[in-house]
Image (cartoon, rainbow, N blue to C red; front, side, top):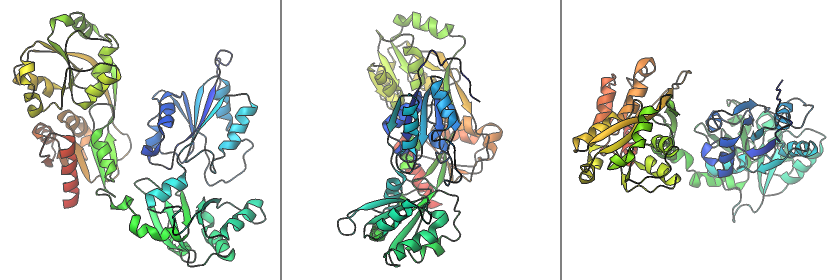
Length: 492
């Protein structure tokens, strides 16, 4: 049982937050803000690990949800959530879809109000909206349906909800059946008995908005047989109505260039990966490995000493966002030129209100050559990780820069402990990422897979680790690497 001694000091707060239908990209901006700030995240079983990974690293992750609506519970709000709120903690109660659509969010909000605990409700994209959009089925359409009704498939004989259910089914509008899989045959038969034609189109949508999404289309009469071999433990809903027939023309999710492909993007630095985002937008399931965290050095004297004599340098060079964060916490402004190498470093400087004099598009030879005149006016202070960016330092020296490289932080890499699913392609955005992922025991299982590398140095690093098949992008850029990955998947 959770116990806290802080209840007399702190006042708790609970946010009932919709996690959306599954795709982490469908989280609202507010939901993401709260996830990153909450001390406790109490989540439904249907909330994916991909979404939970966005929570504040020190937050307590508390599973409190149920599946299939089975079994009665003696509470409206889980007692562990209530205990943490009463202890003064900021709690995000993370609910699949929208908290107020078949999510019992209203009951939880009632109990919080009765307990005197402040509560804010943050809506999420409902599973119905997400499933319909990703299946290419408009819930309403000027020529087919002017209304839509959400129904629970848990309705039982003799209940008031079943009476309402049958009344709604007798119309002509679109119906969305939540939690309908286990009683699908009975539910669809009720629709026929209520007056719907047995030939009315119906779609069964499982794992909606995720890479595992599966859509099975039939009619009220044929759909039960079509899902006979489907795993009914996988969350699913059913859409009924003439609008289902539009899927043939509209379906977009399965038609994306990399739909059905699983790619591993190697990582060496923390933060959002532009390459991973581009690949996901093209339909790929993307594993970003390893998890990377930037942490402060226990011994800061070298970087502190360098910053104390910052006036001696012609400029300060940042190669990533972590370096910016580490230095700006000590020196919030600069009296010397600031150079950002790469978009991430430039964006980090912008977040801190610092405008870089120069933004170099990348650390490759061609990008640095564009600014060779500037870098010959050294010396420059290069802020880097404890073991990071040797190629950047070497390239700066190659173009004639006088560089003093000083570590301000270090990276902690966490490799997965679970077996990897089958991978179609390994994407290598940098030589350091290649070495991080392909070295050691973890990398041995990847060496025989096809790989796409961003440049010759990255290719060389991969081959040194034992990679057997590496193809280099035409240019040292995110767009070129993504294009190479797409072409390789097409060839395979």
